[in-house]
Length: 301
Image 1 (cartoon, one colour):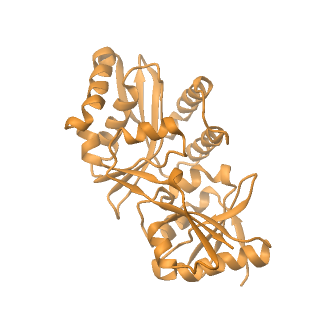
Image 2: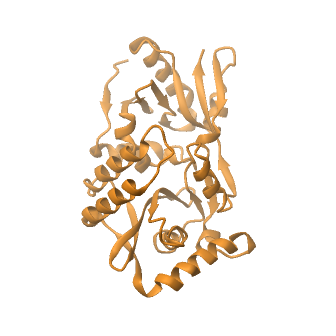
Image 3: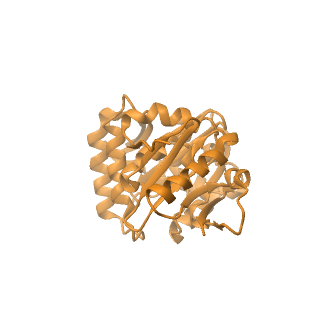
Protein backbone atom coordinates (compact mmCIF):
# COMPACT_ATOMS: atom_id res chain seq x y z
CA UNK A 1 0.00 0.00 0.00
CA UNK A 2 1.11 3.55 -0.75
CA UNK A 3 1.15 5.48 2.53
CA UNK A 4 0.07 8.93 1.37
CA UNK A 5 0.16 10.77 4.69
CA UNK A 6 -1.38 14.26 4.60
CA UNK A 7 -1.48 16.95 7.25
CA UNK A 8 -5.03 17.95 8.21
CA UNK A 9 -6.11 21.26 6.69
CA UNK A 10 -9.35 23.23 6.64
CA UNK A 11 -10.05 21.99 3.10
CA UNK A 12 -10.34 18.44 4.49
CA UNK A 13 -13.42 19.16 6.59
CA UNK A 14 -15.97 17.62 4.19
CA UNK A 15 -13.87 14.47 3.79
CA UNK A 16 -13.43 14.03 7.54
CA UNK A 17 -17.13 14.64 8.18
CA UNK A 18 -18.18 12.08 5.59
CA UNK A 19 -15.86 9.39 6.95
CA UNK A 20 -16.75 9.98 10.60
CA UNK A 21 -20.46 9.76 9.78
CA UNK A 22 -19.94 6.17 8.61
CA UNK A 23 -19.96 5.16 12.31
CA UNK A 24 -21.56 7.88 14.43
CA UNK A 25 -20.73 7.40 18.11
CA UNK A 26 -21.48 9.67 21.07
CA UNK A 27 -17.76 10.28 21.69
CA UNK A 28 -16.57 13.82 20.97
CA UNK A 29 -13.75 12.49 18.75
CA UNK A 30 -16.47 11.45 16.30
CA UNK A 31 -17.24 15.11 15.63
CA UNK A 32 -15.24 16.65 12.78
CA UNK A 33 -14.97 20.01 14.55
CA UNK A 34 -13.11 18.31 17.41
CA UNK A 35 -10.37 17.15 15.07
CA UNK A 36 -9.86 20.62 13.61
CA UNK A 37 -9.92 22.45 16.94
CA UNK A 38 -7.09 20.26 18.22
CA UNK A 39 -5.14 19.66 15.00
CA UNK A 40 -2.44 22.15 16.06
CA UNK A 41 -1.89 20.49 19.42
CA UNK A 42 -1.74 16.95 17.99
CA UNK A 43 -0.07 17.84 14.66
CA UNK A 44 -2.84 15.77 13.10
CA UNK A 45 -2.31 13.91 9.83
CA UNK A 46 -4.35 11.25 8.06
CA UNK A 47 -3.94 8.46 5.50
CA UNK A 48 -6.79 7.56 3.18
CA UNK A 49 -7.57 3.89 2.61
CA UNK A 50 -10.16 2.28 0.38
CA UNK A 51 -12.61 2.19 3.29
CA UNK A 52 -11.74 5.07 5.62
CA UNK A 53 -9.15 7.31 7.25
CA UNK A 54 -6.22 6.38 9.47
CA UNK A 55 -4.94 8.97 11.96
CA UNK A 56 -1.36 9.87 12.87
CA UNK A 57 -0.81 12.29 15.75
CA UNK A 58 2.14 13.66 17.68
CA UNK A 59 2.83 15.16 21.06
CA UNK A 60 6.31 15.96 22.37
CA UNK A 61 6.24 12.57 24.12
CA UNK A 62 5.05 10.18 21.41
CA UNK A 63 3.52 9.39 18.05
CA UNK A 64 0.19 7.57 18.19
CA UNK A 65 -3.22 7.09 16.58
CA UNK A 66 -6.93 7.16 17.36
CA UNK A 67 -9.77 5.00 16.04
CA UNK A 68 -9.94 4.92 12.22
CA UNK A 69 -12.84 6.81 10.67
CA UNK A 70 -14.77 4.09 8.85
CA UNK A 71 -17.75 1.76 8.99
CA UNK A 72 -17.95 -0.64 11.93
CA UNK A 73 -17.51 -3.54 9.50
CA UNK A 74 -14.20 -2.05 8.31
CA UNK A 75 -12.69 -1.35 11.74
CA UNK A 76 -10.53 -4.48 11.88
CA UNK A 77 -9.10 -3.92 8.42
CA UNK A 78 -8.25 -0.28 9.10
CA UNK A 79 -6.85 -1.07 12.54
CA UNK A 80 -4.52 -3.63 10.91
CA UNK A 81 -3.42 -1.02 8.37
CA UNK A 82 -2.76 1.50 11.14
CA UNK A 83 -0.64 -1.05 12.97
CA UNK A 84 1.20 -1.91 9.77
CA UNK A 85 2.01 1.76 9.13
CA UNK A 86 3.34 2.29 12.65
CA UNK A 87 5.39 -0.93 12.63
CA UNK A 88 6.87 -0.82 9.11
CA UNK A 89 7.02 2.88 8.26
CA UNK A 90 7.55 4.54 11.63
CA UNK A 91 9.24 1.54 13.29
CA UNK A 92 7.06 2.01 16.35
CA UNK A 93 4.65 -0.12 18.28
CA UNK A 94 1.10 1.12 17.99
CA UNK A 95 -0.56 3.09 20.75
CA UNK A 96 -4.18 3.93 19.90
CA UNK A 97 -5.90 6.34 22.27
CA UNK A 98 -9.53 7.38 22.81
CA UNK A 99 -10.96 4.09 21.59
CA UNK A 100 -14.71 4.04 22.18
CA UNK A 101 -16.39 1.01 23.74
CA UNK A 102 -18.08 -0.07 20.49
CA UNK A 103 -14.78 -0.05 18.62
CA UNK A 104 -12.96 -1.91 21.38
CA UNK A 105 -15.62 -4.63 21.33
CA UNK A 106 -15.68 -4.85 17.53
CA UNK A 107 -11.89 -5.19 17.31
CA UNK A 108 -11.89 -7.94 19.96
CA UNK A 109 -8.10 -7.95 20.11
CA UNK A 110 -6.15 -10.87 21.59
CA UNK A 111 -4.86 -10.09 25.08
CA UNK A 112 -1.53 -11.79 24.46
CA UNK A 113 -0.70 -9.18 21.79
CA UNK A 114 -2.43 -6.04 23.10
CA UNK A 115 -2.96 -4.29 26.38
CA UNK A 116 -6.34 -2.54 26.68
CA UNK A 117 -6.45 0.13 29.39
CA UNK A 118 -9.55 2.04 30.50
CA UNK A 119 -8.79 5.80 30.70
CA UNK A 120 -11.20 7.51 33.09
CA UNK A 121 -9.73 10.98 32.48
CA UNK A 122 -10.96 10.84 28.87
CA UNK A 123 -14.51 9.63 29.50
CA UNK A 124 -17.04 12.04 27.94
CA UNK A 125 -19.92 13.32 30.08
CA UNK A 126 -23.36 12.78 28.49
CA UNK A 127 -26.43 14.71 29.70
CA UNK A 128 -30.16 14.93 29.09
CA UNK A 129 -30.46 18.05 26.93
CA UNK A 130 -33.94 19.03 28.14
CA UNK A 131 -32.81 18.86 31.77
CA UNK A 132 -29.98 21.29 31.02
CA UNK A 133 -32.34 23.60 29.14
CA UNK A 134 -35.00 23.72 31.88
CA UNK A 135 -32.89 22.99 35.00
CA UNK A 136 -36.04 21.45 36.46
CA UNK A 137 -36.05 19.18 39.49
CA UNK A 138 -34.25 19.04 42.81
CA UNK A 139 -30.95 17.89 41.29
CA UNK A 140 -30.67 21.18 39.38
CA UNK A 141 -31.90 23.48 42.14
CA UNK A 142 -28.46 25.04 42.73
CA UNK A 143 -27.89 25.53 39.00
CA UNK A 144 -31.25 27.26 38.61
CA UNK A 145 -30.39 29.49 41.56
CA UNK A 146 -27.12 30.42 39.83
CA UNK A 147 -29.01 31.38 36.66
CA UNK A 148 -31.58 33.37 38.63
CA UNK A 149 -28.79 35.06 40.57
CA UNK A 150 -27.13 36.12 37.32
CA UNK A 151 -30.39 37.46 35.92
CA UNK A 152 -31.13 39.37 39.11
CA UNK A 153 -27.76 41.12 39.02
CA UNK A 154 -27.19 41.42 35.27
CA UNK A 155 -30.50 40.70 33.50
CA UNK A 156 -31.00 44.24 32.19
CA UNK A 157 -27.30 44.61 31.43
CA UNK A 158 -26.70 41.33 29.61
CA UNK A 159 -27.47 39.78 26.24
CA UNK A 160 -26.94 36.29 24.82
CA UNK A 161 -26.07 36.26 21.12
CA UNK A 162 -25.32 33.66 18.46
CA UNK A 163 -21.95 34.75 17.08
CA UNK A 164 -20.26 34.27 13.72
CA UNK A 165 -16.73 34.34 12.37
CA UNK A 166 -17.18 38.08 11.82
CA UNK A 167 -16.98 38.37 15.63
CA UNK A 168 -13.52 36.77 15.60
CA UNK A 169 -11.66 39.80 16.99
CA UNK A 170 -14.15 40.17 19.85
CA UNK A 171 -13.95 36.45 20.64
CA UNK A 172 -10.15 36.31 20.59
CA UNK A 173 -9.88 39.43 22.78
CA UNK A 174 -12.14 37.77 25.35
CA UNK A 175 -10.23 34.48 25.22
CA UNK A 176 -6.90 36.23 25.74
CA UNK A 177 -8.35 38.05 28.77
CA UNK A 178 -9.72 34.77 30.08
CA UNK A 179 -6.41 32.94 29.67
CA UNK A 180 -4.45 35.72 31.37
CA UNK A 181 -6.75 35.60 34.40
CA UNK A 182 -7.06 31.81 34.59
CA UNK A 183 -4.87 29.72 36.90
CA UNK A 184 -4.64 26.52 34.91
CA UNK A 185 -4.15 23.05 36.41
CA UNK A 186 -3.04 21.64 33.07
CA UNK A 187 0.70 20.83 32.87
CA UNK A 188 0.45 20.34 29.08
CA UNK A 189 -0.68 23.95 28.47
CA UNK A 190 -3.51 22.70 26.28
CA UNK A 191 -5.41 25.96 26.73
CA UNK A 192 -2.81 27.79 24.62
CA UNK A 193 -3.34 25.30 21.80
CA UNK A 194 -7.08 25.53 22.33
CA UNK A 195 -6.90 29.24 21.56
CA UNK A 196 -4.88 28.48 18.43
CA UNK A 197 -7.51 25.95 17.37
CA UNK A 198 -10.37 28.40 17.89
CA UNK A 199 -8.53 31.04 15.89
CA UNK A 200 -7.88 28.52 13.08
CA UNK A 201 -11.55 27.54 12.91
CA UNK A 202 -12.73 31.16 12.93
CA UNK A 203 -10.32 31.97 10.10
CA UNK A 204 -11.98 29.32 7.90
CA UNK A 205 -15.77 29.77 8.33
CA UNK A 206 -16.53 28.87 4.71
CA UNK A 207 -14.88 25.45 5.19
CA UNK A 208 -15.43 24.60 8.86
CA UNK A 209 -18.98 25.24 10.11
CA UNK A 210 -19.41 26.08 13.79
CA UNK A 211 -22.10 27.20 16.20
CA UNK A 212 -20.94 29.89 18.61
CA UNK A 213 -22.73 31.55 21.51
CA UNK A 214 -21.69 34.47 23.67
CA UNK A 215 -22.95 36.47 26.63
CA UNK A 216 -22.31 40.20 26.70
CA UNK A 217 -22.46 42.17 29.95
CA UNK A 218 -22.53 45.95 29.63
CA UNK A 219 -21.68 45.45 25.95
CA UNK A 220 -18.53 43.42 26.65
CA UNK A 221 -18.20 39.74 25.75
CA UNK A 222 -17.80 37.90 29.07
CA UNK A 223 -18.66 34.30 28.11
CA UNK A 224 -18.16 32.18 25.03
CA UNK A 225 -19.05 28.66 23.88
CA UNK A 226 -18.53 26.71 20.68
CA UNK A 227 -20.43 23.57 19.75
CA UNK A 228 -21.58 21.27 16.96
CA UNK A 229 -24.50 18.94 16.30
CA UNK A 230 -24.70 15.28 15.30
CA UNK A 231 -27.98 14.32 13.69
CA UNK A 232 -27.53 10.55 14.07
CA UNK A 233 -27.70 10.68 17.87
CA UNK A 234 -29.58 14.01 18.10
CA UNK A 235 -26.59 15.18 20.12
CA UNK A 236 -25.11 18.58 20.82
CA UNK A 237 -21.41 18.60 21.63
CA UNK A 238 -20.06 21.48 23.68
CA UNK A 239 -16.43 21.63 22.61
CA UNK A 240 -15.40 24.77 24.45
CA UNK A 241 -16.96 26.89 27.18
CA UNK A 242 -15.32 29.89 28.86
CA UNK A 243 -16.76 32.56 31.14
CA UNK A 244 -15.57 35.31 33.47
CA UNK A 245 -15.53 33.50 36.86
CA UNK A 246 -15.98 36.81 38.68
CA UNK A 247 -19.54 37.12 37.36
CA UNK A 248 -21.83 34.99 39.51
CA UNK A 249 -23.95 32.47 37.62
CA UNK A 250 -22.47 33.29 34.22
CA UNK A 251 -21.30 29.76 33.42
CA UNK A 252 -24.71 28.31 34.29
CA UNK A 253 -26.50 30.98 32.24
CA UNK A 254 -24.23 30.43 29.22
CA UNK A 255 -24.68 26.67 29.41
CA UNK A 256 -28.47 26.94 29.51
CA UNK A 257 -28.90 29.65 26.88
CA UNK A 258 -26.54 28.05 24.36
CA UNK A 259 -28.62 24.87 24.44
CA UNK A 260 -31.93 26.78 24.27
CA UNK A 261 -30.88 29.05 21.41
CA UNK A 262 -28.33 26.93 19.60
CA UNK A 263 -29.53 23.33 20.00
CA UNK A 264 -33.31 23.26 20.64
CA UNK A 265 -33.56 19.93 18.78
CA UNK A 266 -30.87 18.09 20.79
CA UNK A 267 -31.91 15.11 22.93
CA UNK A 268 -28.53 14.57 24.56
CA UNK A 269 -25.48 16.73 25.21
CA UNK A 270 -21.83 15.71 25.25
CA UNK A 271 -19.76 18.10 27.37
CA UNK A 272 -16.52 16.22 26.72
CA UNK A 273 -14.00 14.92 29.26
CA UNK A 274 -12.43 16.35 32.40
CA UNK A 275 -8.77 15.68 31.44
CA UNK A 276 -8.27 14.26 34.92
CA UNK A 277 -8.49 17.74 36.46
CA UNK A 278 -10.30 17.47 39.79
CA UNK A 279 -11.97 20.89 39.64
CA UNK A 280 -13.29 20.24 36.14
CA UNK A 281 -14.47 16.76 37.14
CA UNK A 282 -16.54 18.11 40.02
CA UNK A 283 -18.03 20.81 37.78
CA UNK A 284 -19.09 18.25 35.16
CA UNK A 285 -20.51 15.86 37.75
CA UNK A 286 -22.56 18.69 39.25
CA UNK A 287 -24.65 18.82 36.05
CA UNK A 288 -25.85 15.24 36.68
CA UNK A 289 -24.64 13.22 33.66
CA UNK A 290 -26.89 10.39 32.52
CA UNK A 291 -23.92 8.42 31.16
CA UNK A 292 -20.15 8.43 30.78
CA UNK A 293 -18.78 7.50 27.36
CA UNK A 294 -15.91 5.16 28.14
CA UNK A 295 -12.61 5.30 26.28
CA UNK A 296 -9.62 3.00 26.16
CA UNK A 297 -5.97 2.91 25.22
CA UNK A 298 -4.93 -0.01 23.01
CA UNK A 299 -1.23 -0.67 23.40
CA UNK A 300 0.61 -3.14 21.17
CA UNK A 301 2.84 -5.39 23.26
